[in-house]
Image: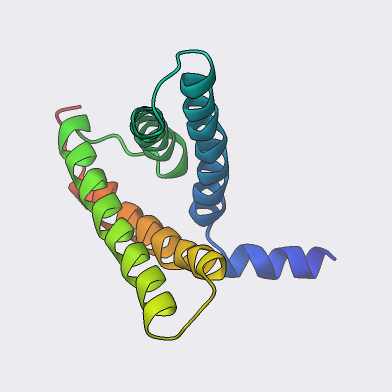
Length: 141
């Protein structure tokens, strides 16, 4: 068992595991905000969704910057890069989902599930190597 755990640790970076943990926590927080805004504040679906996603982006940025990647560079440039990464990941997700449905005839629900894969992969690698990369940190913080 220790060999398997050791092998997994050598193959999967700790930052990848942390990124997934942050994603799960972020999903719980985001959905809680969406549902709370709908139920308690009587927000429309679109407004509740927007507020939930805004909170989710903030939570994701803070946790990934501080815990997943331990980034100590300037916050504003890292946030701008992080948002750029999220946009690229989102459009890759959307393109995947639409291609699976419209071109390959996938079930809509299955396509949405598969679309999570490019979103997560691009989000992780974009965060690790672009948004929070150590070479991008400056000495002014």
